[in-house]
Image: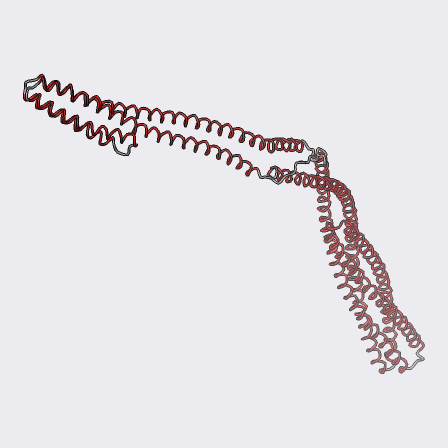
Length: 566
């Protein structure tokens, strides 16, 4: 029975109760209906006939009374009235007997047959008695009444009494039958009621034993689980709702144990991860601080580089002015040498003027040598500055590489720093490349300057030789002309070299401007990186605080989980 569902058990109990209630009700209804039929039968077939017989007896006595009064009265009206009363009572008796004779037993019908025979005789004798009384033959009427009417009426009364006794006996039998039916119905109803109480009580007790203790056991297990002991397990196994509820409870406990175990593992992992996150945030903060320091160094180096570039630009501008002065002097010397060559044909008249011009050329050549030496020194200074710029660019590149490494260690938070560090590295590479170009230009300028100095030395020697030749007046104008032509060529070469140097210095100015812009961009970028790194550092500090808070929450979660027993 334990595998029957609770609803079916309750329906079974209700069905049994209804069955017994219906049984008791039907039993009482059937017996009460039978008793009602018997009562109706007693009233209609026994009590009413008794009343009818009594009415017949009363009417007979009334007739006797009316006969006796007719014998003593002399009033015709009264006599007439008495005759009418006698006829009315006789008719009433006839109707009663006729009604009484319907659907009766053989015994009653036999008695009624005797009654009818006697009533005919009685009616005839009564009629004669009435006639004698009306004729005032009272003695004869009385004699007729005494001898004929009264005996017949006594016999008729005996039949009526017998019928009344018969109906009374039948009514008593019906009453006894009703009493027996009442007793039988009472016994049956009490028996069915007792059996219903016994069976319903037993069924209810069995259902109670199958439901209530198991529910109490499940309630105790739930209370145990409520206190944190998740090892509770419902051992009752059945196919009813309690068994299904117990299976669901066991599945729930199993699921809760699994969930609590998973939460415990997750909380431990969370605590470990939060600690690692705290350590990582601390390490990232330190790395960010190191990056900030490196970026600040890069920024300082970029500013120094910017100052150096500005100085280099100033030197290059001064050198450009000097070169332009050299080019102007070379062009002037070239014009003078051409003029000297042109005038060489004029003869010796111009020797003194030639000596003076040669002295002038010598002076100009010395100035050119001086300017060339000055240009060489400026080139050397530019070379030193270029070396400084190259060193700064190298250092900037190294610092950007370190910043990229630190940003890579910082992970996702340092991605922006890696991009900015890469841009700084590119700027450093561009600075190094520009410095290398300037270095090559400086080397070219230095080489051409050396060539110009060599040419100027040659010019000076030629000029000195021309002076000696003019002073000794032993050389011919042809030699002077050749020398002046050579000098003119050399000066022309110097002029070309000076123009090339001037163009190179223009390129150097442009390159230095590019370097200056790149350096300014690098300085601005390092400032941006520094600001971003400061923000990163603040974010790392917030992450560290969050990780610490998360670690505290994980510890609290572990304390809560320890309350459960799995």
